[in-house]
Length: 351
Image (cartoon, rainbow, N blue to C red; front, side):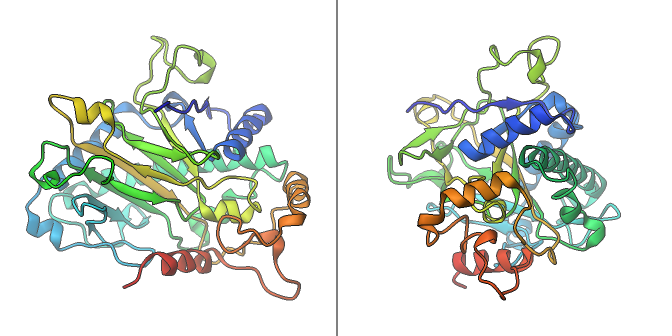
């Protein structure tokens, strides 16, 4: 299977229109892109500490993990077993207010509340840069999206999540069937944008191409041709693998499908199946959502307007989820971000 070649974008200057254009082009073509690690506020130590806490949590007693679960809300619950094989783990963190978790933390993580809060804050700052650049690309006010994601205006559905996928040497994967089982089934994300942090040597993410084929997404893409301007360090390498960014259903809906919410999944890659000592897979995800009360009115962008005009003959098509913001029936109020999220959750969970 061929790997997809996604652009790596330097976001160190979130007010550069040319970078905004590059961001928009990638979001419209692929729905996925990389952000150069050196162009964010994250240090390698920030990322290492977060993965260390994740590993510590998933190594904690079963009783501690079993006390937490993900429920069908926007919420700050903890442990989930949610793949086809029912072997994976997930730990959700809701928003942190004043550096404090708004949920009970398990014993292995409670001493590290400040570290978790800081990591969540850095994720939000990174999302703000990306949203600013997307606004520039769409030729709307630079603050159009960021003000609607600002926690000062109220709570949102934003979530920080630790994920764990056991390797093929784990007893938990003994029932694995080649070409049948996956680590996480095909899905799209619900919110505005998603940040994915991955570890070197732990691949598995695939995205569905417009041709209906699965394409692997490298953890560490070929950096030799990206150049210093794309955020490489002086030694030509990254402090940590570039952050993978994807567009969610809500932002696709908000832009009438101009920005793509691409279906993706996590598999057991062939490299792992053939490895003598395959690794467990750990990843960290940040799901960014607007403030709950945000009305998803049409984005005032001529670029979005032009895209909508091109789709006039197929207005019945679903865009992101539930149509598109610009297809609102006259006299009907716009969905709020919370209503959009709850509708997606209701369509996903059956309990």
